[in-house]
Image 1 (cartoon, rainbow, N blue to C red):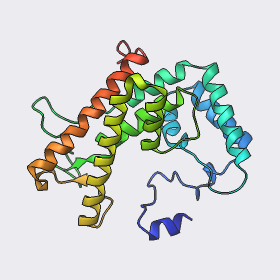
Image 2: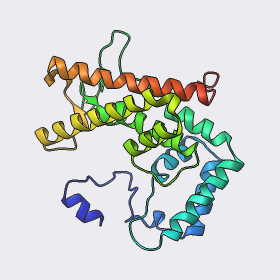
Image 3: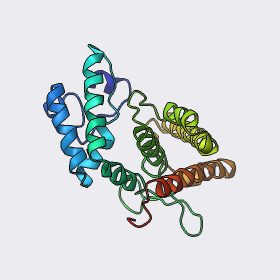
Image 4: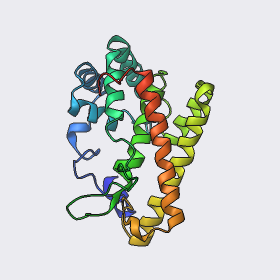
Length: 228
């Protein structure tokens, strides 16, 4: 499966977070223990693993296995509710990517020097926010970022404008990444901001306002100001 995905354009994970790694081929009981350990000991490494593996979904076989695993995760979170606070703090690690002078924060060195990392600096903050907020409602059946925000619109009508803004921003970011990827024959992750038109630079900056809005909501809800 990994090889076939690579063939059609999905890059293999450099950290080997893939089904081809025996480390991640576990029974339900082993996964239950794994998730419980990450939730009860939420250090930086375990939080990173949670953000990766919490987005599992059913592909083939018995859905009962997925349901059992989801129930176990929510039970662990319920018994260690401080975990969501740590996950919230982790979701705020990437603030809106503009400098004090409203310039794009670009890579300072390496292969992609002076390019903008659209995945890490703008898409992942929205992905992390949607995951955290939907988990706080004990919902594990939705793993798509846009669908998560749509569900949050239903669950929290008082925050409807913020979540609709996040949906619009995430779709715009997907468009930017896809266009860049097709143009450069790569993943589209790194963008030469100077190559964008003035209109597209403004449109990209506008998406950062959605990141700021949802991060402010998270900071207030999970009382994170004193932890930052």
